[in-house]
Amino acid sequence: MPRLVMKFGGTSVADIDRIRNAASKVKREIDAGYDVAVIVSAMSGKTNELVGWVRDASTKPGTNERSFYDAREYDSVVASGEQVTAGLMALCLQELGVDARSWLGWQVPVRTTSAHGVARITEIDTANLDAKFEQGVHAVIAGFQGLSDEGRITTLGRGGSDTTAVAFAAALGAERCDIYTDVDGVYTTDPRITKKARKLDRIAYEEMLELASLGAKVLQVRSVELAMAHKVRLAVRSSFSDEPGTLVCDEDEIMEANVISGVAFSRDEAKITMRHLADQPGVAASVFGPLADAGVNVDMIIQDISAEGFTDITFSCPVDQVAVAVKALEDGKAAGTLTYDDLETDEDVSKVSIVGIGMRSHAGIASKMFAALSAENVNIKVITTSEIKVSVLIDRRYLELAVQSLHDAFGLEKAG
Image (cartoon, rainbow, N blue to C red; front, top):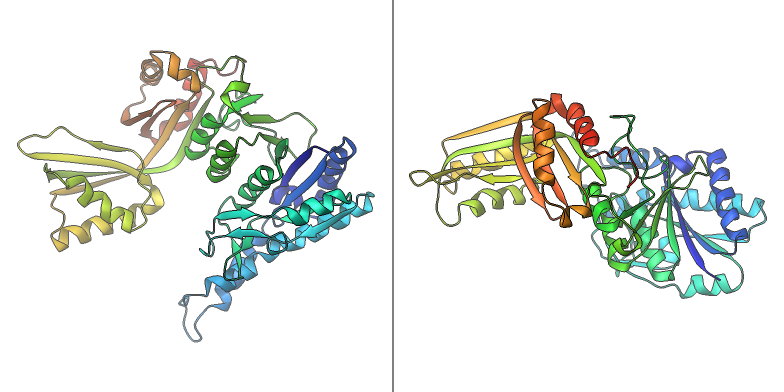
């Protein structure tokens, strides 16, 4: 029988009624002739509660400081949220007459690296699942977790349940991986910004990867990367309606791609400029090495043309990392490994991007973008490009205006 992977996020399994609703969707696919593997997240809010318990348990007696907690025990506690949901989902399916059982990551097993809290899946042994499918038993699998070579429970970090679902779809040779969430698909931009936002029927892996990395919250970057690598067809669907969702697939499955598929944005960005650095080999490494060591997520970078042997470097990063970035640079200056005159920060900027595989074969896209922003008197501070993306950094107060004007300029409310 063909196989299907169905993943339900935290809002989709937030209580028993929602789990029953999700179970009914699973039964519908089983009745249509699929062997189904269901991947579940913890109930909405449960993971945060478990993390809070770990932190409370790790408080040093008589102080307000947190001790360095054992990451292995952190994973053991946090992974329990998905265990609860898996068992409840299996029970709800059984009530509907479906022969189903729950599986934890270690029972499958899902093999991972030993990086607790941010583990990576290395292998999924499907022999146990295959045997149960042959017996007509359907699987409910706890997402977000696996088993290290040391025999310890691991968790996969942000987006771990989506990643689990895609990995199982690849391992099982599934026809499709359906990601059920609280939205009904991928839109041309955030509908909260403009009512003209349109749900896409299909989007290419490359476009979805760019949108996810640029701020779109529908899918996590890791899961899209994995789907693209293994050619797993993803369908983003709503748990609360039966409307068709958005298929994330290979570019070859899209008959005629739009030039631009979407406008993405990241609201809380910051810009940091270093003035009057010596323009010599290794200057960029002396700047971005310490930033990397400090864990700063540097994004857009501009280095000005050298003047009299000196240059300026500007980069962007998340606004909540500004203090860490400034400290790393000031420490470098104090240690004599960095030389610059001034350090300027601007914490009131946002990033807006246009994405589309059609940009590969159409000229003038960047010019059209800049003209649309100019017409609204939106000043551009930084620009970066790739083969299918153009991103700009602008004052945050113009973010919604910029998104709306770009959406209109490229006619994204109309189907291609």
